[in-house]
Image (cartoon, rainbow, N blue to C red; front, side, top):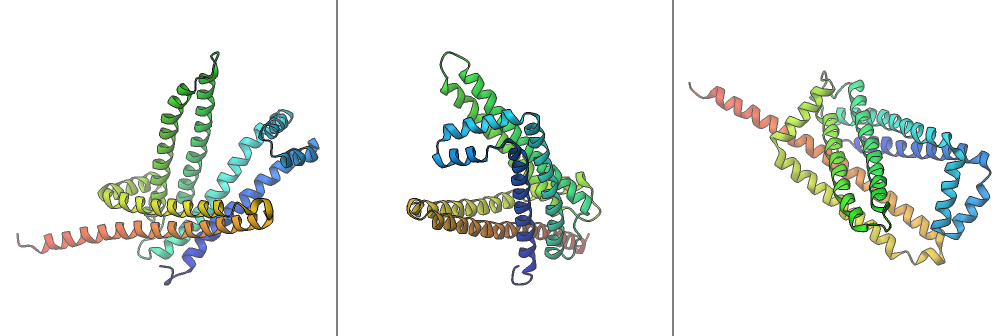
Length: 291
């Protein structure tokens, strides 16, 4: 795939990294705009140098209380802006890559692709809010008695976290497949139904392919974490060198993860095309058989 058309991988990396960099700049700019009038820069830097988690938590809570409504507005506005930015770049990049990967069938229109990506972003933020709310409510239930009930806390947290994560993974996966398998002229719901039917007809193949690429990404992540752990001794003697090596390892992980994602998308398309070709062959054989 990369030998035939290296631009596919470059486009994928470009929109993903551009989205991440711009989102980080928006987040930092919003934090600077909110915090700079409070004149807490020196206090924040001195607290950060102490590496005291309790002092840092108290300072952050104090800043949030001082901001008041501004913190609430920023907590709503910044994620919405980032979600729209990511959805726009994802829809644009996905259409370009699909046009190059699948020449015979046109991809979804930009508006439909954008709507699917916005749904993915909304599901991600909704799952995150649901997860935080669930953890906060369960912590309240476990600590409202005379003594914290850790058994009750974990008894509530484990199933709720699993259910929310499974919901997010399944919904995000299906909407992602809808952007891949959707064809020109299809609407949002038709593209989603088409992706669901495609996966259902080859559920064993899709499950095996997804598990294989998930395993590869997990192994890659563990390898990067192991490298960061092995060089952690440099943190005290050469913190700048350690930070540079960690950044290099993280960038290497992201580059390889993007490659694995593109390989997985190409594998999905190959599975779908193989199923279509097999169905066409069966129809040709049936039509050629004598009545």
